[in-house]
Length: 327
Image (cartoon, rainbow, N blue to C red; front, side, top):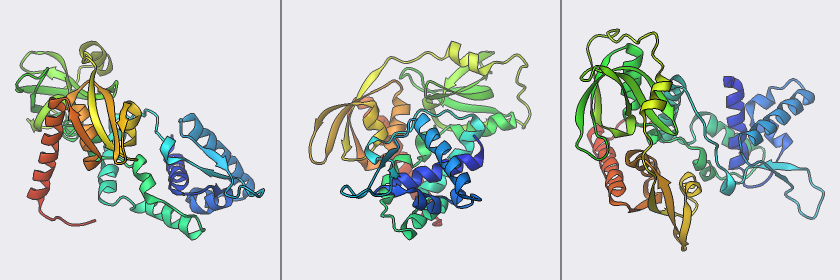
């Protein structure tokens, strides 16, 4: 997908998701920069029709309707927040690295850059907006595994790495690896390479890496075999963990991705209790902790402990960094 088209579709989603009412085509054309640049009405109509189809093919619910029930008002468009959910999306390592940087920028300034401009444009053409509705598309830094950045750098520099690795709840042991590549498979990230201690190809799940990943040795010291197939290695060597269930209390209208994965057990004025299936404790802890106070883990205990540990580490890192410089 070309960058300009990706940016245009994202701007369109922001426009239709943030609006509290149906947005007319004229308002959309003024609010989305790429539409405003169209040479004529015909070019805009063709582009807008293609984009609507693209959104629907992605599984994004696009509604049409009128703001005036009693009159034959102009048809408008919107994306209902309650039924919005992005489909599963896969990225290669290079794309994920770019998204990681974007996520960090968004976390510090949710309405920065293009998002802020889109909101202001909507307001300038008389559309009421709800910026909080954009929380469902907000990327979170810890959606990626903490070990990803260091391993990505090591793969690019062809450097050996050391890390502590825990499997099946056992005590963590140091592993030494010549990393060949990173693979996302069934929603989990793996690093593939030559295990120096065992002299064989091994696959390590990033969510099971404890603490920091340290690179050692000169850049270029890792040689990837010509016949290495990291995707096949993951499929053969990575064994899926048995499914488990997390009991989570989720505050009203928050953590929509988690809500969609689980089953409602009970509800009250403040939120609802959900049973959400998961396989890997650390991966689930990363997902849950990203929603902060919007989600409380009731059980199991190892998931609760993993979430607490992540939040404590985040707090410690923030305290060590001091106040920092605001963006």
